[in-house]
Length: 361
Image 1 (cartoon, one colour):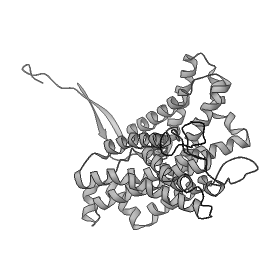
Image 2 (cartoon, helix red, strand yellow):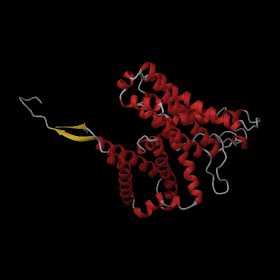
Image 3 (cartoon, one colour):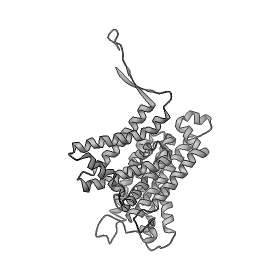
Image 4 (spheres, rainbow, N blue to C red):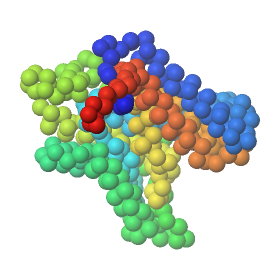
């Protein structure tokens, strides 16, 4: 006996639309069971996790702060995945973007100019794109598996950041704490509404990136090329499209958005470089992209949902006393159910019984 997956000839569009919603419901149900096992009231726990963060204006600002990098990175990953290029290293590109974008406020502290912040954002995007170019080069010219190379580069980027902050870039006046000099006002991303919270312009960048990516995929030749090569590389070659050029474009596009998210997070939310600048945004953005069906506009909504798991996890720690690892569990459950629902929509499970004849299968 063996189990096979047989592709359905035509998947229902209604099921495709309902799949993310069903995954959310299943995640909530599994989360409730988890809280019961932990000895917590599931209604109280889910309320603390998903409703309490939405009741105050300041927490809505925090939701926007956490959603901004998820949306920006998720949009870039959606373009990559739709072109059948699997960038798993957005976390490393996020980190390198933060490093390269921080060169000006750390090494040129005496330069006070309105040009500092725009140059920081540009340098962050370039840094992320150049770091993403490494797996692109290895795949395009050496046929190396981009999943492995992009993922391994994450740890190189994180260790490099740690080395910088504990060494050459450590603040000499920081009482030996591993952090850089604080960024000046000219190097700080301004808040959108300063009087009500600290949500900054990175959220606006994320929305604009999602709209532009959606327009590109829907109305431009480049978007058509992405879709065709992603569905069938052979058909793309017949149409005159180059898979190697698409590898470069998708990785550079994805890396640039991840790098922009990195420097925006450091400049807008943290105000200096430190060894840990991300709770795993680059990996969580993979869930964001798949939850939205790789649709850039849908990524805005799914980014807010995943940002809520971060914010709700912090609230649940204080109100009901659960571990911060519960956030990771919710994110993992959501990814599991999204992929499971998609699999059952596009494939049907078939059990094949093998008859034994003459002692051989």
